[in-house]
Amino acid sequence: MTVVDHTASLEPGPVNLDGMDQSELEAFVKATGDPWPERAAERMFPGEPDGMRTVRWLQQYASNKVRAMGCRERGEIELALKYEIYCQRYYNELPEYARW
Image (cartoon, rainbow, N blue to C red; front, side):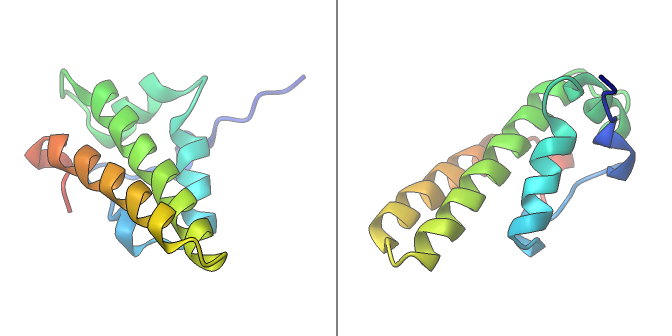
């Protein structure tokens, strides 16, 4: 089985997750997920000692945003708002170098 490294699509520096559509967010989650979180951190935030933790928080933000978008599409607004609150919590924990 061949494992594809999806981190090649990642650029150094912060990424505006709020400017992405659902498919872009899903691609980001895939690119930053297992087995590549360390490589994603190295590509996005080289030299940052907490880069991997930051990538994980960004991944969680993106994952919850995808869920919120799906809820809104189905008319589940209250549930979408809960996922958006989770997003805000992850954003608030991001270091300055990772915020957009």
